[in-house]
Length: 302
Image (cartoon, rainbow, N blue to C red; front, side, top):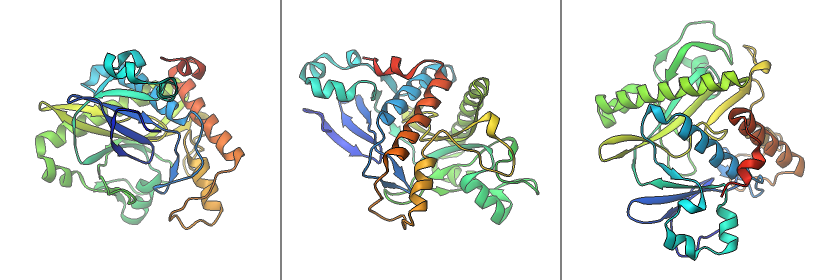
């Protein structure tokens, strides 16, 4: 949906980015869902609101660990002139799914932290005994808990392509040792705090990725934070080494898409009602268990 009177700067797989003024942007999370970097034609209701609500929760909770780009998530946080131009339909669309953010210069790396061996990290370990140049002990199995979390950055790929895992030294060469060190240390601290809180809620934060930008030379946490789209969350009671547990994310959609024989090139298949409903339930459950609040309360957020 277009926002009347605002220039749309970009449209990602999930988020739409609008210019507000010279210092602020509007980040709007849609209900689009993608697998293998291809957007499915079927949305998952309220998915964008879960992403926004959880990001707002984490930005607030983790604010003591450094600056972030979030200004506000309520319609009243918008500049008065912009708010006055919004019609009822636009206000309804933005409710619970918008983040007013400071403009930052986004850095060209995904800052990935892994606490467990799964996904592309597991595949790389099986092939090379290491992940992004980080040597790991022999004999680990899928979903093994690592002795300590590891920082494994990835370069940002062009749209429609996959990010590429790289060694920390590649980041150092690109942005310098001092900034690379800040990004690594901040990412590990954010992961540790997020994982500790999740564990208290009976959830394992297996891995996650952060994005950072620069504002007046300061490192600023940006984009989304510790959501089911950017993180792998597992119910603690289901975890056992050797088996990838069910997760609170779009894995259910990914499994369905794979089962159809789809070749992972556009167009992605339509999603059946039961897949949409089960996926929405997983996202909402993640929100409620992590925040300790009913999702309905966020839906009323204005």
